[in-house]
Amino acid sequence: MSCRDTFVDLLDQVQTLQTQVASDAFAFVENRVKKKLVGAPELTDVGFLLRELENSFDEMRKEVKMRKEFISRLLAAMCVASLNEDEETVGKFVGELASAMPDAKVYPKIPKAGTVEYEELLRYFGVPDPVIVAGLLKPSFVQTQEWLQQRAAEGLNPPAQLGTYSDAICVFRRRGRGRKPA
Image 1 (cartoon, rainbow, N blue to C red):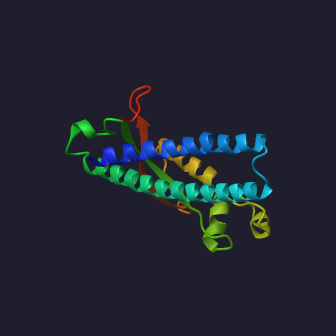
Image 2 (cartoon, rainbow, N blue to C red; image 1 turned 135 degrees about the vertical axis):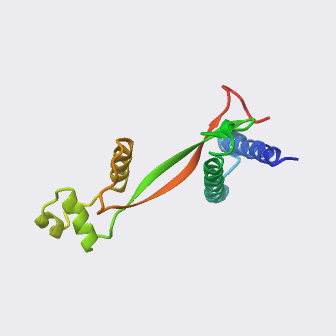
Image 3 (tube, rainbow, N blue to C red; image 1 turned 90 degrees about the horizontal axis):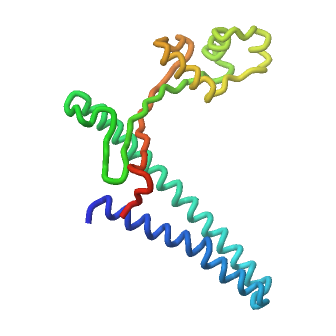
């Protein structure tokens, strides 16, 4: 069994469990409530168990996201490494089920508020000293990142007052309309 087959099987199991939780189990409880075959103590336990399921699924989601991000960064590194080797993989990788395209972004390192570097950055943006001292404005990470992306698209470097770091990931896309893992 291949890695892909293992994960396709796992996906099928999770989707089956989702169906069981979302409709089958709840329909069973709903039916028993309508027939007055269940009371408050049992519903209390069902509510508690649903909360526990929610927590388990949330932890599983976090774990899956972390693993997906690892694979995404690994693929992005492989794509960069293959730039000079294989003309067919330049820009993307293609599997049976999906494609992965690298996406590199520049992120701001906004200095800590109250530091000299922070004040210099705010002055670069034209914020007057009284406003800086009063702490009335704070750069938005998201807006600063978008501003950096625009500058990069225009061929401009970030200002010296703003540190940056970059990160490359791959964006996954399903291949073909309606194509589902077999």
